[in-house]
Structures are given as structure tokens and as C-alpha cells.
Image (cartoon, rainbow, N blue to C red; front, side, top):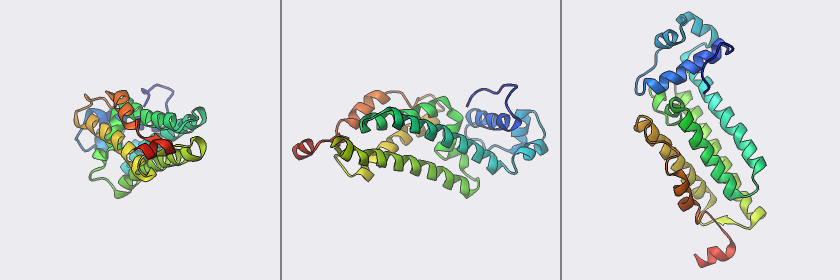
Length: 205
């Protein structure tokens, strides 16, 4: 998320502060009292903008969703091949995670432990939506390009997303030292080598 500035609304400042606390207080459960101190307002002022801490977390999840899927729409518009689309979608996810370390604790569920179950459901739905998008791209490769994954579309999409999720998890576990994009291009070349094959290539395999 961008740094706070005077033109930001109080709501945006609260979400910015929450994202920063997720990054700096890794492993700690964030309280509204601590968040209010970070923002420089009273707890009552927080609740004038968000009815609960859960709604604050949902505000961050909504930011993640809108940012990722708005950019994915542009990726689909600007790239014709399935190979390029998948590469850019996964690179987007990893790059977004790297630039927003605090939000990675939401992406991997770490910060949601002990919070309301609906937040974990909401985050799971975000990843399901990403996987569905990858499946759609892979399915469209056959009628558009005559290419098909070497394994089932479902298995291929799951493998690709699991690889990205694993890198995000490593980022959090290493206290943000092991960057999600580190070695990614090399790994992508290996992952993508047999990702999409023509009918002749599948017979050879």
C-alpha cells in the first residue's frame, strides 16, 4: 500500500496503519488500542470508520482483491497467449506480495488466526478465484492455440498457484528476507517447460 499522506481519508490512514503493523509486529495479535495509537486517534474514532476490527481486515482484503483482479483484467487484455497470461498473473501476485509484506500475513492466513472465521473464508475465496482464473486461461489455450497442459487443467492450475503461495509463505516465515520474486524467473522456466503442449508433443511425452 502507498505511504500515508495528508490527502488520504481517515479510513485509508487506518488501513495503512494496520498494514504497517502487520509488517512490523509480525506474529503479534493486533488490538484496536494499539492500532488507535499507531493512527494517533482514539478507539472510538476507529469505530466511527469501521464497526469492528474484522471490518478493518476486510478493508485490506478488498484492497488486495481489487488491486489484483483489476491488473489481471489488463493482463488478459494485453497478452494473447496462455503462456504469457499465466506468467504475468503469477508474477503479479508475487510482486504484489513482495511490495506489501504486511498483507502477506493476510494472504497466508497468519494474521487471521483467532479472528472471525468469515475472514479466513474470504481469503480462501480470493485464492479460489485466482485458481479459477488460471484454469480459464489454460482451458482457452486449446481452442485458441491448440495447446493443452500435460496434466489436467485442474491439476496444472493448482500446481501453479501452490508454487506462488509457497513463496509467499516463505517470505513471511523468513521475516521478509526471502523475497517472493527471488529465483522466480528461473523457476518459471522449469514450471512452464511442459505446461502447455501441442497434440504432437503430448504423444511424444
